[in-house]
Length: 339
Length: 217
Image (cartoon, rainbow over all chains, first blue to last red; front, side, top):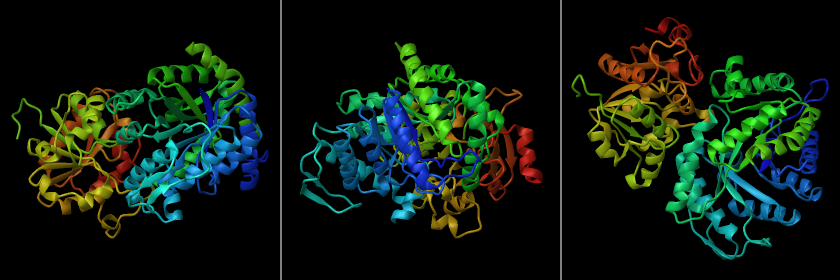
């Protein structure tokens, strides 16, 4: 399964000026529709709350895409569950599931930004308890039927019917994991699928996480569940074009993040390493990207790859071309390589 | 302590992002390693088996008692609840960071002009604290290793007030696969913190010293 994820990065116009949040959101609807047309399996939106990532209400955008598509699966990537209410998340995605005729998914996780915590009045120091309790409650809600739940992080529920009911059982739910083995165990314990967020360094180093997940499932007496990979990248007609389009935007975005978080800015050398066979970025021609995806899915025992496209500052046109190539050339080539 | 031909025994406290990675690279460098989380070792048995095969999952008190070096790799927000008695008399390696943009603001570390490891050392008054491994990403620790003498061998800083402890920890870092730049106080170790020139940067020994400027020994 091949999918796309976006964090709703603000796109730029032909004169390299940032487009409005509203236009960015309308463009994302078009991108989701195109992803369906070119045969991709999944389109995901990662919740963010900042000026350069204005996609704070992913499910609304997904609802719009659902109304104009018929095949592609739609979901969050990720939903920051710790600062949300599991009941509301279930209601929103169950509604999306209804609109889309059963095509909704959720990926639950922390994400890499922390903006939602102060925004909604949560303390990051409580992160673990919030996440632990809320994934437990969400797993209960997914099963369907009345829910009884007691905890410290939201009001208790007693025999509570939560609507809308799904038509045919639980929709797919994943936990996104960036490097915490305890999160892997937690996903297995509650029966969530595992989405590995690999955004830097060697993808192969995550192979033990994949093994840990399957062994933990076995220990908990559960059937095997799929493992997916989420990584950033950009596809263009040639390797050169993809690099030229992506590098300045990547450098700018990472420079901004590194200034806030105080880590060293990546160099051209580290970028070259990341787009090479041992790095985490999928930047290049369809053939380059397809080979890398196939190799890493095999190495990680994974069956799903979600390309995080749309580095901030790229144009809507460049993103549409990326989606087109990814769907019509990369995806069939990956399937061929894995056959 | 250890005899000259045996390697110090290492206890890693923490089985989150960093603990198992540190345990694995230490094991691969030949050290006897145990790993402990806050509770029953059964809870981290599978993590240890898969991510740091060869390490022994133990109760924290047992792991610490038998160790020459204790590596503190717990989330910093858990540190205020950490019992200093647990590591009294031990050499403690502080790998933690006070990093508000990713982990949020914490009073103990905010309301001070001290570096985070100095705050840690004051609380662990009966331990000897050395600061290192905080400025390399846990995901880089594996891949960054090189044999001694490699032209591209990355350097890591080791800072502490006790020269013998710094020496011991520097020996571990070298053996794991990194050059070492020593600083002779925890206060100087503030240079390794988030926002500093070496935080998250892959630098050779010369580059690392240059980045630190005159402070580097």
